[in-house]
Image (cartoon, rainbow, N blue to C red; front, side, top):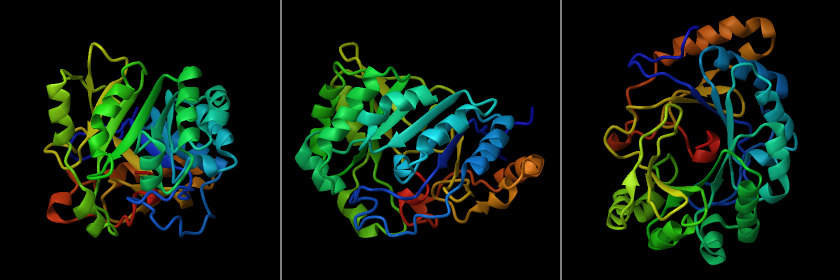
Amino acid sequence: MTQLKDGFGRRFSYLRLSVTDVCNFRCEYCLPNGYQGKPTGFLDHDEIRRLVTAFAELGTWKIRLTGGEPTVRKDFLDIVRTVRAAPGVQRIAMTTNAFRLAQDAAKLKDAGMDAVNISLDGLDAEHFKRITGDKRFDKVMAGIDAALAHGFDAVKINTVLLKGLNDEQLPAFFEFVRKRPVSVRFIELMRTGDNGEYFEKRHVGGQLVRDQLDAAGWTPMERGEADGPAIEYRHPEHAGRIGIIAPYAPGFCDTCNRLRVTARGGLRLCLFGNGTGNLRPLLQSDEQKEELKATVLTALFGKRVSHFLHDGDYGDTPHLAMTGG
């Protein structure tokens, strides 16, 4: 079987597929003014089926469904079933703000969802509202409990590390996983096209987390083949884990194993790249599958060895909701 492989020998077993760029939160590091786009024109079920099938035949076996907030799509459960039915797909995950996860967890599990990542940037209602612009902290916490209760293979928490907003809560997050079998991953704030001033004010490096983990006796774990970019740590007295996603660290891109497709069918080779390859014209008929696969394979040879954030090159993504983060 032909494998997705770039010019640097990296293999791509992991696809992040955005199903919408709409988000109903107003996180100040992403959409401080709320969603400003047009909530139309997203890939339909047949287009998603053809896309996922082609990627699976190229060796992609893990699909993550993202947004915006994916569950604002009323047909999201049907999308999960569509992806689950694609031959070769072994694992389906999603990233969500969990505003409706408490009511949907059982249905998502039944539809074929394997793993859930939940955005949580503060451990109390005050911090949560300050960062997200939303008051539904209790619903998000109930969603985390529901995900654990319904037996997903993995429940992970994504926390964007923000200077002066939640960096002082690190010990509380460590305590959060003492009895909960979840992985909390601290994500360094990333520079995008529209957040330069905010980045300068709020960015703090992942070394802050590493230092506190080392001091508390946590030890790093090995990465799995289809793992994302997090380096995870474990502790014998904690049921859960702590992870760090540090895009500014040396070698961050060396183990890249994921590609992105936007909600309207644009192939993104890198979160911080320039331009998209429009796959949508090749998603209109089952007979286009071989051309679609060939197009993706050819596009991969344009993938750069790494991002160039350190050089002030942030690509053309204005904010992370556009490409699913």
